[in-house]
Length: 214
Length: 214
DNA sequence: TAGATTGTTAATCGATTAACAATC
DNA sequence: TAGATTGTTAATCGATTAACAATC
Image 1 (tube, chains in turn yellow, brown, blue, cyan):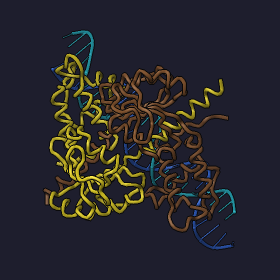
Image 2 (image 1 turned 30 degrees about the horizontal axis):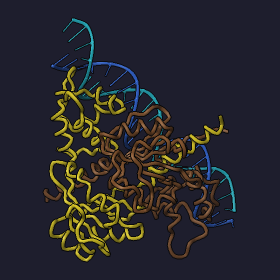
Image 3 (image 1 turned 90 degrees about the vertical axis):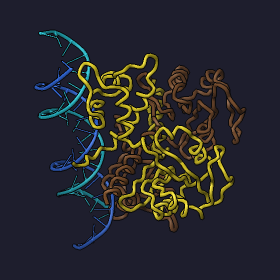
Image 4 (image 1 turned 180 degrees about the vertical axis):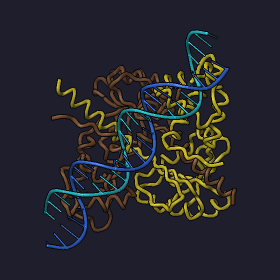
């Protein structure tokens, strides 16, 4: 039995299906077809079918996929069914906003504690602990933390990453707008708002230029 | 003279180059080669060269690109040189974190005001106004706002988008984890944390599975 | 001149889309 | 049965990478 590698693009679409399936309004249907899903989300129906084929063991012609099992299948595939403990480094505004976001539970993510060079608070509003950086090591080792979230300013990000990796973290969610150098086997997922802004900004530039032409 | 369309993938890499160029440490070099840039950012050097060719009017063999003009060129291409005014809908934690982030100036983005169905505050810590939703229309029309940022819960997002579009907004930065239906010509850029989480989660699943095999 | 580096043209790779057969 | 829908195989498309010529 071989592991099939699933592309990042597919991985990014799965949670979109998932959240839609969970939020279907009004009379919740027992089954849902790829056609319906696709048109609701503005995607191609073949693409939806191919994606679903990866996680599900099939729908039925003329009927579609069972909504509930589809939800289960996607959640299981994404590993949302067992909780991942994570630590967050950098308890600034963004860090605190993430700590306070209760929606992550749904994705099996539990931000257990925050760490900061100079903590300004001892606990977040939600009661989660904020430790000085010196406490990072024992905490991560004790709880076998595999995921780290970096919300420090750019210049501190690489060091934060190094320390996380040193204590066994295997996946890093990086909100600092810098490239992180990491050894093989460690995954860095960049949440770089600047990239989104670039797309938006260029679109607006084009809009404005066009308007001026009129 | 024809407009050349630049792909989203390129657009997303440009700010990465930009921030690196701005942050080069120690003895800031006059010039920088694509080779150096590529290795610093862990990218292919041909890719870097191709990307730079889009915005710059060329580097010099054996020397590279002039760092300063490259910065200017990218900023101009991305439209960071003239400021875009934006409004934000949903003054919750995330919304306030975004309002408070001063780094956006650098990208030519100015979040002028926030709007909320039931504002809990009148001004943010930074002194930016928070209005009730009823004030959205005149504000946007008066200031000719072209960009909207949506940080409301999922179920309010579509309505927020509709209202923004109604008052002339052309680009929407959507932090709500739902698909937005918009007419042609309006750009929606989704900042969906769930998609990043999916990538991280699947990576960790694989890690754990492998470890158990040992 | 020699060599590093640019810029371009061609080849590869992967992902999306289209076409079609299978099925309830 | 007929038709909607699934799932798969082939074709297209676009982006990345490799090869090479141009240049300072």
